[in-house]
Image (tube, rainbow, N blue to C red; front, side, top):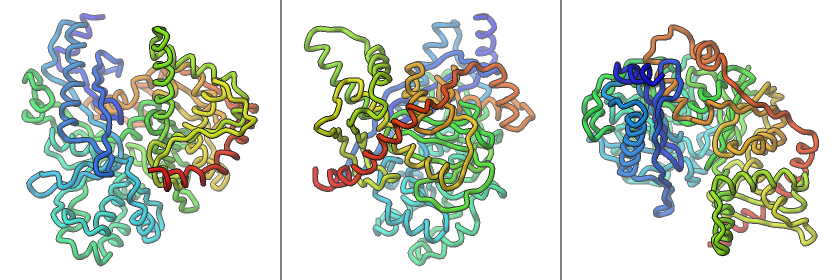
Length: 531
C-alpha cells in the first residue's frame, strides 16, 4: 500500500486541504479516494487588542507554512517521497469577519474576527432594511458599523474579504469565494446563486454608503459554486506556502469555503432535513432547509451549503473554552501532588463523570461566556458558575453543568426552528472537540437538540478534510453534483455511531434551561459591572 501511496504523491495526484480554525491550523493530504495520507498542524490563538479580537497576518502565514511543513515532514517520513506537485488544493477558515484592503493590497485595519460583538447597531439597521437577519459577525455588518463609526479607512476600501478569501487571493490572484463562505459576507439569492441583487441595491442607496467612492458590488469577492476549478496555485503562491521551494504551482485551487461549509461536507450534511453541529471554541448548527423560513429571526442566520442550498444556522460564540479552563485547574491540582495524567485522559474522565450527575445538574448552573453572545443578548463575556445553597455540588454535576452550558445557547436558538417553524430533522452529524470522548457529547447534544446525533470516523479530521474533499471534487472531474459525489463516492461505506435522545436527559436539560434563562440577566449584569 505504501508503494501505491508513494506513487500517488510522486505523480501529483494527491490533494491538499488546509483550514485555519480558531485554535489550530490543520493541513491534510488526501488520495483520490479521499483517504488521509498525511497531516500537519499549527497551534495559535486570537488576541484581544484594543478591544478587538484579532489574528495578525504574520501569524496567518507563519501558521500556514508551519502546518504545511509539518504535513510535508509527515508524508516524507511515512512514504519517503517529496511533495512536488498537487492535483488540487483547498483553503478554509473561520467564517465571517472583516478584512478590508486598499488598491495596493494593504490591510486597512487589523483583522476583525467573528468573535467581535460591537456591530449591534449595524446589524439591527440592516436586518430592518433587508427584512432578512444580518448577524453582527457578518462582513457586511462589520463594514456598515465602520461607516456608522465614521472610521477613516472605509473610503479607501478596494476589496473586502474573509480570512479564507484572503489566503485564496494571495496564492491564486483570484478575488473569489465559495457560495457558502460568501453567504457569511452578504445575503445570497439561492435561486440565482449569487448575492441578493435587491439587497445590494438597498445597501447602495443608504446615504452614508452612497457617499463612498466605491460600490458594494465592486468590492465583494465573486461568488463560485463547489466544483469550480478555474483558479490555479501560482508559482509565487507555491513559494509562499512552501518556503523550501519544492512545491510547484499549477494545482487547481477550489473556491475557498468557511468552516461551516467544510463541516457540512465533512459530515455529509448537504441534503434537506440533514445538518451538522461543529463544536469547538465556538459551536454552531447547520440545518439544510426543505423550504424557506416563514419569519425573520435574529437568532438564526440563513446561509447556504457549498452548492447553494439554503441553510438555517445558529452560531454561538462560546463552547469549549470554559471547559478547557476547568481542565487546566484539575491539571494544576494533579501537579500539586505530583500526579501525572495525560490531558486527553483527564478530558475523557471528566466528560464521563458528567453522565453520572443529576439529570438537571442538581442546581448547578454555568455560563461559558468568554466573549459576548448575541444569541442570548449578552454584550461581553464573563464566565460564571452559580449554584443554589442547597445544590448537589459535586464533580459530576459541575462537569454536567459545564457541558450543558456549552450546548445551552445552541439549544436556545434551535428551539425557534422546532417550535416556531416546525423544522424536522432526521439526523445531525457531530464533529469537533466536544465529540472526541465517545458517546458523552453525542448523548447530551441529542438531549439538547431533541434529535439523533451521529459521529463518523472521517469527521475526526474535521474541516481540513472537508475542504480537501471539496478540492478533490473540483480537481478530480467527477462529473456529478456535490450531494451525489458525497453520497456515492465519499461516504458510501462510512462507519458512524448514533445516539438517540434519551427522554430523561431531555427533561433534565429542559429543567436546567429554566434556571439558565432566568439567570441570563445576572450574566448581563456581570458583563456590565465587572471590568
